[in-house]
Image 1 (cartoon, rainbow over the protein chains, first blue to last red):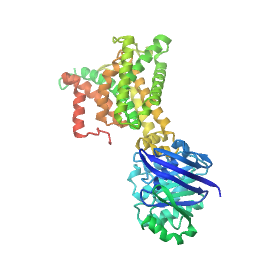
Image 2 (image 1 turned 30 degrees about the horizontal axis):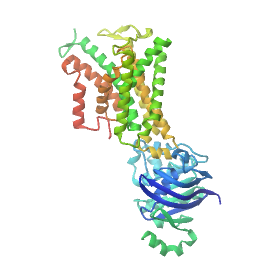
Image 3 (image 1 turned 45 degrees about the vertical axis):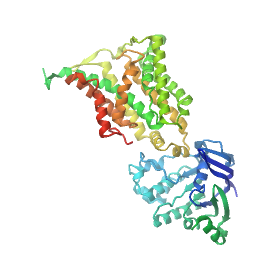
Image 4 (image 1 turned 90 degrees about the horizontal axis):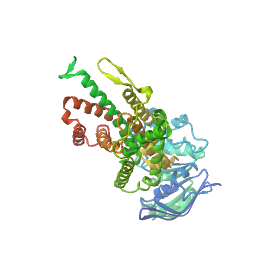
Length: 234
Length: 294
């Protein structure tokens, strides 16, 4: 299987605080990989490091065969990465439609606007809303995901997409992930909600103290339940 | 003769016109400041000096190279805008991670340097720049005489202001600007070269100041301190309109110009302070400015 992302000995800092202490992970084409771990274990920082959004990073991040650890953020994005941050980052000075259309094309074969509206019917209804941030939390989450599907990005980094959302919306997002996987997207999920991630992911990494503590495949999930309880405290 | 509140109409109209002219410059200058503040979060204290440099550029183009007013309208903003690009790349870009105060100090220092250098070279008496021939003369409107050049300044300023507003509020490029004003790192994560966008935005804001300088050259004299006098009022305009608001800058610029003109008719003693009185009132009642959101 072709490797889309390979991270080796990744260290990252915010100012003086050393957050990642040597992360190693790989993601193959078409996989859904989930990063589990408690708050503060370094999962979000790992995604931000891939995008070059941390203060300083060291080690190796190879995307599509290119070493990107010294690249600026906008150049990294052009390797075909779509990033959906934990805080969703919907722009209040842009309408819903402008938010959706904002990210420029960075690759071939993005979804059409019609396909995106079919996937997220709420957004079609609310596309004329003048301020993106007037949408509900669930709709903002859908918009944050929808806008990176048009661009031709094929590696999606999704940070805590179910956080604070109603169960019915979480289920809808789960169906979206399944569809995206069928379309061939490669997805890295950072997830607190283990029950959401369990049926979707092919492989799991568990992070603790800024390192990968454990990794296993979906097949091994059953046998790792006890271990996960200890790591995640669930 | 027609009178309004005991003042003859031609006097009122004359001062309204002067107010509109001043307002045209307030609007153009505060627009540039608003565009720069929006994206860079820097209060560009060099703005007045860059306005002055625009006027001087027009003067040199005419007197050293024989380039007329119309070409100067294009070339002077390009040249002064290019110096802005260099300033942003070499100096301002090093300051974004520091406190806002450093950007303010740097641009203030640059303003003093530019003004000092021009005054050292050309004195402070002012150099003449004549109205282009095609805009000399004027129209008799019956109740007042309207010089063609002044009408042109008002129309040109309005056009540039509304054009800038349109680009920022209604186009894709403007959507990038608005989004990057809110959250630059997210826009960069979409693959947009935000550092380059910031450089060009500063260059554009500076070019707007220089454009105002060219248009001002035939009305006021080309003088090293012309910007220092104007910019203080312009900062008051920006505070009243609200930092970073595009429409706020335009509406407040023209509005305050007119208010200043009318004050000259009805209560001349206050005409120099009326804008600052309004600023104080606005700051007490609505500290974010009339159109500001932060």
